[in-house]
Length: 470
Image (cartoon, rainbow, N blue to C red; front, top):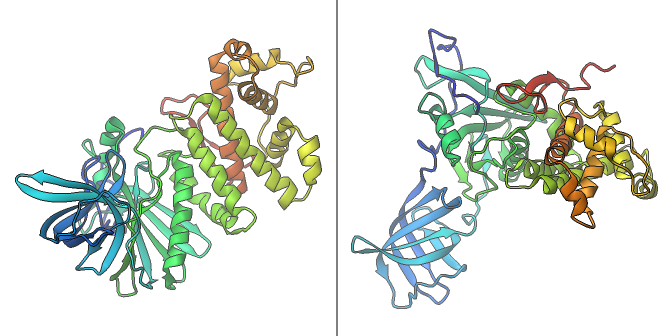
C-alpha cells in the first residue's frame, strides 16, 4: 500500500457498463474495529452441569489478538454454575441450533449488570451438508492492487481494483472493499496503524457453474490463502467465508480463524501495480498444488518465504529458513520429479552451493551477485573454504557460505567481523532466489517486482529473468 488511489467516477473510466463490485457480508470501517457476527439468545454450559442463558452477541475482535469473542448477559442461571474458566465449556447459539467449545474469562460487571465473556475455541457444530454454487470470503490486510475497473452498487463511481484468479476449474474474483481507498480510507489508515481490517472480498465459483461441496470449498480457500500470503509476504488467509446455494441463500459459515497478520510493509515479488502478475502466476500455482508430489513442498516453501519476509525474524534466522526452503525444492525437483540425481549422490556429493546452482540453472536465473550488493560481493572475495582455499564469488557461494557462517560459527569472532550490510544483502538474495524459484515452478513468464533494484516506490517492475530465454 504505497499510495492511496482516489475513487474514480464517470469523468474517469468508471461507468454503468463495468461490473458491480462484490458485496462483503462483513466490514471493518476503521482499522481494528470489531465485526459483529451474531446477536441473539446464547447459552453457556459448564462441565459440571452449570447453565447460564440470556441475550448476547459474538464478534470478531482483532486486538490484542484476533479471536471470536462472545458476551452473554444472563437472564437465567442454575445453581450449578461455577463460572469456571475451562476449555471444555460449550456455547450454544439457541436460535441457530449450533454450538462451539469456548473458554470464559468469568463474570464482569457492566453498569450493575453481570455479563459472561470469553471466546470460541473451535468451529460451529454440527456441520450440516451443504452444496454451494458460490462462496464469498473476506481478506484482511491485502495490497491496494491496481486491476480492472468495478463500480459501487448502482452509482456511477468505483475504482480499478479487481483481480481475477483463474486456475484448474475455478474462477476466483478478488475486489477491494469500498472503504479501502480515498484520503481517509483503510489503505492510508492501515499504513499508519499497522492494524487489522478487511480490505478485500472474494468470490469462488466453478468455471462451468457447477455446484461443489464444503470440502472442495475449504481446500480452494486454503489454496487461495497460501497464494495470497506468498504475494503479500504476510499471513492473510481468507476469513469468514459464507457458502451460498443455487438460490443465493446462505448454507454455511465458517468462523474459525486462520493465520492472519496485522498490516505491515513488506517487499515481495508482488506489489500494488502488479495485479497482472498476481493473476498470471495463479494457474501454475494451482497446478503444482494439484500434484501429490508438489503440494506439500510448495506449501512449506511458501510458509518459509512468508516467515522470512517478516520483520520479526532476524536476518540470520531468515537465511537459515531460506536455505532450508531452497534445498527442499532442489531435492523434490532433481531427485523426485526429474530423477536426474540419485538420493545418495544428492546427499553426499552435492554441497549446498551446488544444489542452489542447479536450481538457478534450471530456472534461468543469473548466478552473479547482483550489482546492488557490493558489500556481499566484497565479503565473498575475501572468503575461503574450511581448508583455506578461495571460493568462486557468485551468488550461490556467497549466500550458502554466509548462511553457514552464521549457522555453524564456532566462535563469535567471525560473526563480529562480518559486515552487517553483507549479511542483510545475503538474506535479501536468498529471499529473491526463493520467490523467483517458486514463480518458475508456477510457469510464470510475465512481470514481477524486483525488490533488489532501488526505486522511489520500492523495487522495480521487470520481466522474470527467464522470460526471453529460448
